[in-house]
Image 1 (cartoon, rainbow, N blue to C red):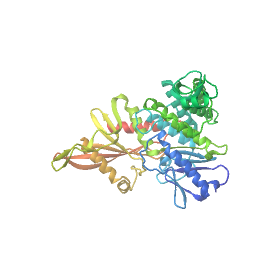
Image 2 (tube, rainbow, N blue to C red):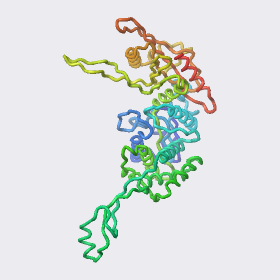
Image 3 (cartoon, one colour):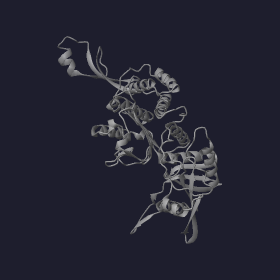
Image 4 (spheres, rainbow, N blue to C red):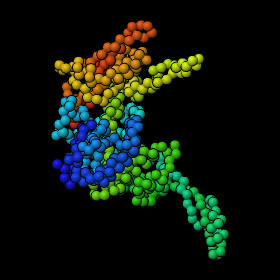
Length: 469
């Protein structure tokens, strides 16, 4: 039963949090509305870290479940709000499909896996996740994102300090820039002030609004108890570089006043993250002494990006690996009457692997399917759980690419033994009047890391290599 004191709620993806389980101070209509506004803002800012392609304008982190409470969706991580914490764990943390035991869930274990997955994603040019490396020392999610922010700021400043033209209006002993003639005729001259001129001009300044925002944010994070000693050391170095920048107590709205051009793109994510930290710290969402933050990732993108990064790690320079490859089309041409149009319906493969003069198409599916080995209901389960739409999709990819093997990759549950074999489904096809067959491999991969245990990494490498050699 929830109380007014700080509460920690652990849930898997796509699970219900009943009204009776919510903290008491979130149950009334006004408090819940404010909480939803907090989540909505963070939903709109999620592009700082990733592009999930979700066209939903309304936040999908925690959604109202009619009159029953709130429901988690496909995003994992932590929401901290007014002293309460909602930890959303990957469904693959279950030890068995459909088992909802929450007692063994540990936020440190979640963080350990997030850092592992993001490290491998950073090994490839993955188009949806924008995260720096060097996050191993993070011991909580807020510390993780502080590490990310500090490294973004350092990378941007190392690449070039930010200067901009600042408009100024002041009285000068000589004309500079644009003279305010009206002010001189109506005010200065009648008053006998003949040697002062109201001028509007621009100067190229290091002490500008963006640098003041960055400095304010860094000072705030330096004093945060979640900031590690290593990050504090990095922040001290950055603050030394910003020594000539004025101290200013910034608010989120200040970030909206900064306009960056294309040459200053490296500072865009810094500005966005500054706004996120400032809002989560200074609005009514954190009116007490507790930090409020919302750091959630789409689990399906983490799975896809991690597998892509791990393939790059396993094969090295022996293979050419492309994420979200889109260099081919399902339709070669379209004809309408006597008019002929070019190709259409661009294919987008999750992962395209070129290895030993062969092409392999891999489609990641972040969904739970039953174990293959020692499963007396194997045929029933696989025909129910593997989507026919996914099969149609990868078969069309295979035919268009002229390959005879495609791979559907699924995650295994936590601590589950490695599947000895993939499930291979064969589809007869006819290409250019020739009979052929496409083999569709359903492969279940280890995905969850245990702290101090490298078996997941070794098992994953063995499974992947065995598929393509």
